Amino acid sequence: QVQLVESGGGLVQAGGSLRLSCAASGSIFDIRSITTMGWHRQAPGNERELVASIDTNYGDINLADSVKGRFTISRDNAKNTVYLQMNSLKPEDTAVYYCHTDDYRGRYWGQGTQVTVSS
Image (cartoon, rainbow, N blue to C red; front, side):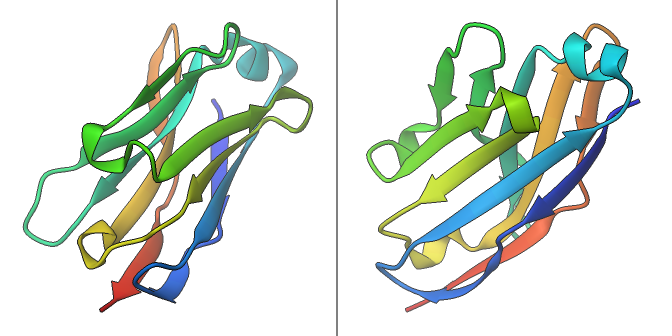
C-alpha cells in the first residue's frame, strides 16, 4: 500500500502563492502501480472536491474550473512526488488539501494539509 506525505500548507494573504508537495512511498510494485496522483480539498461544511489530478504515465491533467489559470499540477516521477502550485490565492481557497493516488486497487489519501488564505 502506498503512503503519502504532504507538505507546503500554511497561511498566506490573498493574492499570494503556495506550493504543496506530496511524496509517495512504498514498494516498487506499489509505486509502479500508481496511475493518477492529485489533490482534493475540503472546506468546513463542504464536501471534498477535486482540485487537480495528473496521469502519471501520460501526463494528462484535470483541473477544476475554479482553479484554472491560477493552479498548476506537476509531477516528478523520479521522486514519486506531485506538486500543486497555487497562485493568486483567494479566501475561498481556504481548505484542507488532501493528496491522493489511484491504482488498480483503489484510492489512497494523505493526511491533509491546511491552507488558509486571509483577505
